[in-house]
Structures are given as structure tokens and as C-alpha cells.
Image (cartoon, rainbow, N blue to C red; front, side, top):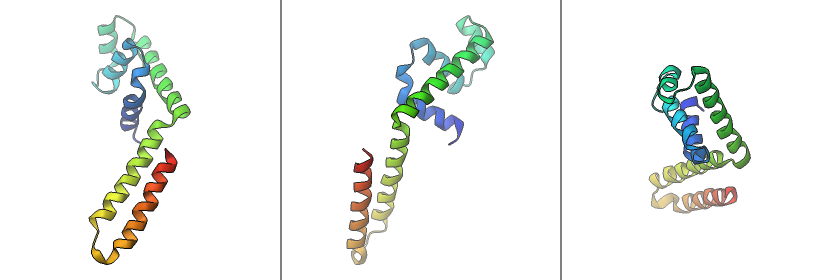
Length: 114
């Protein structure tokens, strides 16, 4: 997964587990594209301090994912829902039972994942 996208997913799912200061610095670095120097000046800490904080936050978010797998489950379900949408867009009366069986199979896979 691309780093920016991966970081966005991790932050969306686990960002609230960071404290307010960590969230602010993390958001400024990854989402507002501020440099380490800009963040350091704004927060009154060193560039190295910002770098270390961003690394610790990234590591914490990754550890949450390694334990809880919420992003992994979300992406799996998103893929399965996409498959269902593809099936319904190709629906016609001739293959109704085949599509129904496939949708049922995919739905069961989603339920098993939950």
C-alpha cells in the first residue's frame, strides 16, 4: 500500500488513540505537508524532536493495526462489496441464480471476517 494512503487509513482508524499534541504534529507532517522545520518552529521543539515524534506516532499506529487488524478487515470488506457491486451491474435475467449464489457466497465471506 502506498505510504500516504496507508498512513491515512491508520490515522483514520487509530488517530484518536494519540494525544492531542501527537495528532497535531502527525497531521501537520502527513496531511498538511509541513516540513519538520515548520512544525518545529510552530510547536517550539527541535526538528529532531518532531522527527522522533512522527516516528513514534507512526510506530504506535502500526502497532495498533498489528494487534487489531481493523484496516485490514476494512479493506477486505471494501473489496468484497466492490465484487458484489460488479455482480449486480452485470445482472440480467439469464444469470440471476448464478449471480445470487455468488452474492450469497461473498456475503458469507464478509460475515465470517466480522
